Image (cartoon, rainbow, N blue to C red):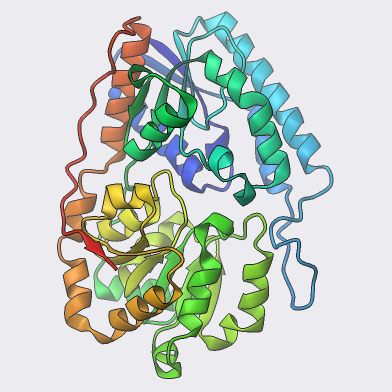
Length: 408
């Protein structure tokens, strides 16, 4: 079996899909045996993508600036550069398929390029279709223009969670045998670290010894503004003792969050770290009192599981995918319940017994979610498609998440 995988997202500064692509390729290559797994783009086309990813300016929001949003002010030439890179990537894929006779093409980011190979696509979520207001207009227009055609190119679909699989069947009419849930994994090295190692890393980064943590790109569906307002509603004493660290780069339409951060939150104990390198994440998770994850919608939600892999407490929203993966262990709060988030944060930092209760069993919940299992389940789908059997859905292992369901 010869498979080619699009690695574009792994060439950029990695967020969720980039980590998925990188880790999947790493583990697939370790498991394939006589099978062949190649990646594209390569060579100068890959270098063009790296240049495209690095060409977007990091806009620093200042008080009093306009409302467009930090990170949403793209360079004038960036859409054209991205289209050019897409065209070059499609050209390279078709040339590689003609020359190397691949059996299958895997697109890890929803919309497969046109080529002669049967395609498998990973659809991480349907937010572009279900909640277009959470995305820039050009991204929504591109998705609407190409998604229906892309559906027809796919022999099979992967989703990160059963809830997204059900959404695809319900919303798009995809037959059950054409879509398989394959859970994501937690990255190597994410484990509870010794206190002295955590302290050394935090000191080196200039971070406080005690803090609450939020991880993720700052964009509308992540619901960071509500989290900041809830945190700022805490008593002064608690905020002084327990600052809130925001680890994540600015995304699209984050102007309201930037305004509130500069006008209110940064004076009340909120620190924005920006993008945090992978090597610092184990210490950042291990040192946190808890991870706060108030997202409106997720296709999977990696940070809560990564926090649990480090033995940490999690307060998460009731977004369906989070209920599916960490809902038996995390404290769940409705995403729009400001008082609920404020009260959960207050209890986290004042009630040691409850905090320990949330931590108990966290590592066991995260343990089944590995990139090795993700790759093994993905290979099952590859072989199913390449074998030409379309009469039944390929079977993958269930994720044996355990824990105690909590709703708040």
